[in-house]
Image 1 (cartoon, rainbow, N blue to C red):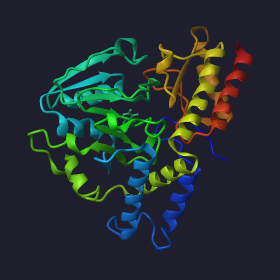
Image 2: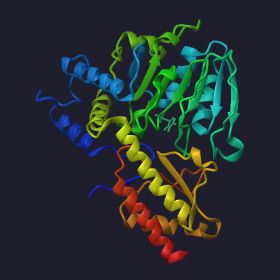
Image 3: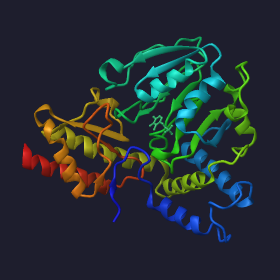
Image 4: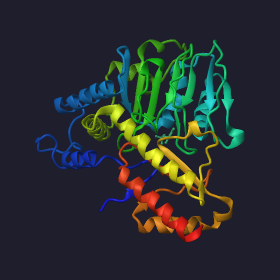
Length: 357
Ligand SMILES: *Cc1c(COP(=O)(O)O)cnc(C)c1O
């Protein structure tokens, strides 16, 4: 039986994705070869790449004038590729967590970094609002979902400079107005596929404005001009992403998945708010993430954390231990997590409250 997998990343994938990739590992398209064995320059793989991009574009409604790339190096390499390609003098960052801070650290190697606002002093328990983005920056960087703290920037901001988003943990979980962004990136391992592939959606006309030389592999233009085939791309990961995209389409596209995600998150937050043992550390309700639901034990029950974890293990629940910087619990409710898994967790919370509260 499959576990109720609440891991933050790598994380649960649709069974459809697992079945299709398992088949293709043994025999890809009746070719007598595995997806792991074929050339990335073969017709069959080119078709996979083309279909993955087309479906990404369709599902997320990506306008013309944008390129979709599949690269290696994780979201963490994008922390440096973004400023390498876009930062001439100055960039603005919204500091909403550890990932945002890591992105800022890399940008400082390339120029001035303006932190427009930060929730660090409150352990990142909310998304800062009412900040001003200077007009003279080369871009403004946000993290749309803060995987560790369970906060989410749910609106597509309107700014007068290219908006850059790390959407590692909420890509394709909700409708997004891509036209408001200059660049969106993320690791695939939270919501799309296995680790090892990074997606980049970039508006072509924001590139080519920096004067510094850019190493070939770190230049977005290299990958645009070569259609993600400058070197050997993470072919297996791209194939798996394609299966996930097909699955999203089959269940009704982004709006359908968004509705399901809202329902799952609401179920869990309602229980956290109702249950006397737990509380949600996110201090502003509207900032609560629909992808990573963080909760901690109320002060007087703190010593029961391990006992609760033990109980959840007996129910087949895995991956709910919170990040060490927040403590408590974190249930990641990514696209592929079935609602039934959330119901099992809610039932365990209720059972525990009956015993202890
Ligand atoms: C997981 C995560 C990262 C790091 O991704 P890697 O692919 O491991 O480099 C960056 N940003 C966010 C928001 C994440 O959730």
